[in-house]
Length: 158
Image (tube, rainbow, N blue to C red):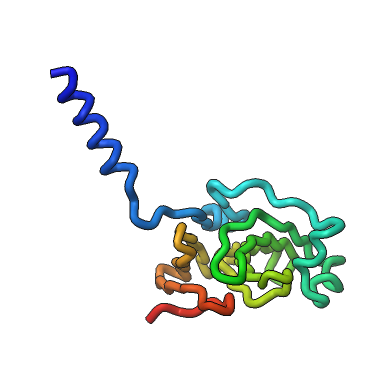
């Protein structure tokens, strides 16, 4: 009987632990729409030294009024990789935070970007990134799914 219980436990762990596409990142605004809940994502770091390569010339110029923080690398695919960026800035409607997914080629050149989540007074933006680097973005309960093509461009899945 002891062996049967162990087999049952092992079988249960195998079934519950084998998700075909686990969520790597789940981002959504807080209920008061003032911050983003980044779930399991590690801290974002203030841009310094070598991290400046992840900013465009416009972002470097805007860094006086916009705070940019580079997050972790989510994954690699073909000849590009995906990094997260947190942007904090002020608009005429108040303070905003955005979490942006960015793809870079093997030479650290920006290929594409996608706003995954942000705080906003009248629009709810949230999103998830899965282990296979597919993306689910929700805007006011409307779901849009994305994949990343061989050049690192975000493409809507139809």
